[in-house]
Image 1 (cartoon, rainbow, N blue to C red):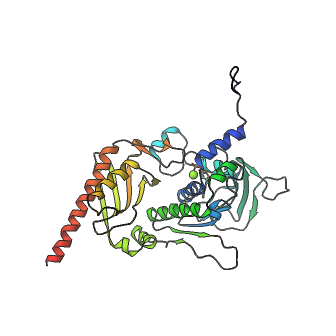
Image 2 (cartoon, rainbow, N blue to C red):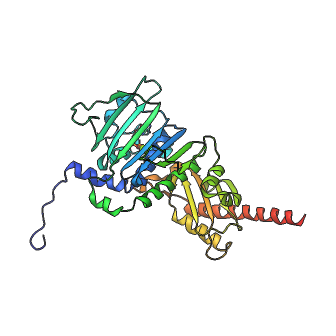
Image 3 (cartoon, rainbow, N blue to C red):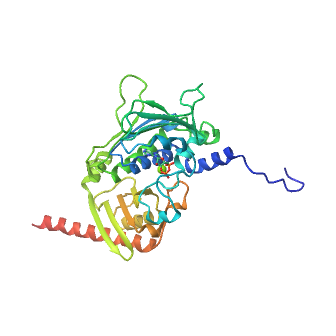
Amino acid sequence: AGAGGPRPIAKLPQHVVNRIAAGEIIQRPSNALKELIENSLDAGATTIRITVKEGGLKLLQIQDNGSGIRKDDLPILCERFTTSKIKAFEDLSSLGTYGFRGEALASISHVAHLSVTTKTREETCAWKAAYSDGVMIPVKSGSSDASPIPCAGNDGTVLVVEDLFFNTPQRLKALRSASDEYARIVQVVLSYSIHNAGIGMSCRKASSGPSNATADINTSVGASALDNIGLHYGDAVKRELVEVTAESSDPNVRIKAWCSGANYQGKKGTYLFFINNRLVDCSPLKRALEAFYGTLLAKGTHPFVYLSLDIDPTKIDVNVHPTKKEVGFEDEEEIVQLVCEKLAEKLAEQGESRSYKVQT
Ligand code: ADP
Ligand code: MG
């Protein structure tokens, strides 16, 4: 390197390309888990059980009671850009599922050991398959037969991700703390369990001994969003929340939220944002809410906000970020302003009824 002419340009081997691309989509265990939860939700699951070892770096297991995967689809399950969810680019504008790129399982298979046991309602037994670098490999080491093997199993799917980033040591080194990764995992499960209240979701650390580790999250089938907020954040938070709902045609948006009022003074802020059912970071929204609460709360105290926005799918671009963590949408300013207005209205209303109650 250095002096001399330019070095020749050469095409990277496909497996290197795939591993680099996978690292962009799956940045840490909680990203992988988010994709897996979304797949279970897309499959219509009503229960989702998650088991984790070493912050997800050793094991991430997710079991759902969704549709299952057809046996005939197993050979291409982890190929890049294979999906059952869209067929044409135009379908993105009416997306009704979380997934659409067919990249999650492929990506995971490039940076971890992945196996799946799945059963559709029609099958009489479950099928197990294993994957590496996008292709199906023999389930039993030593065997040369890569076809899925029949086994016992419930309706639905169990996905097992082991040794995440075993082949990308730099990434592994950057993620030193299993407890930090586990905290992120719990945060993802918790957020989804609030937004998808009614679905039974659990998350636990795998126990090595005979005693079953108690779940860190365990929501009930049929619970409400508020129930699950109370479960995770405590009754003191739950008691102070008001529900904000609004619908508007210009800007075109439906707002649903549970937000704390003037009485709640959190040591740190909790902001859970969902846009078209997708857990996202939305800095404009967060900044606006921080400013709003800044005028309402004592210095150094913060609100709880769970906010769900439904926006016209044609006005939203979910494909702006590899982890889909950020989304872009039209009328952002107007929508953010509307959220703050509706919240202010609701809190004012509530304030009135409170002082009214005190007066009588
Ligand atoms: P995408 O979700 O974008 O389609 P994925 O790589 O996440 O891509 O999944 C590929 C396909 O595998 C999905 O389209 C779906 O058909 C199937 N699949 C993945 N996970 C599940 C699951 N838990 N239950 C049923 N089908 C699943
Ligand atoms: Mg998916």
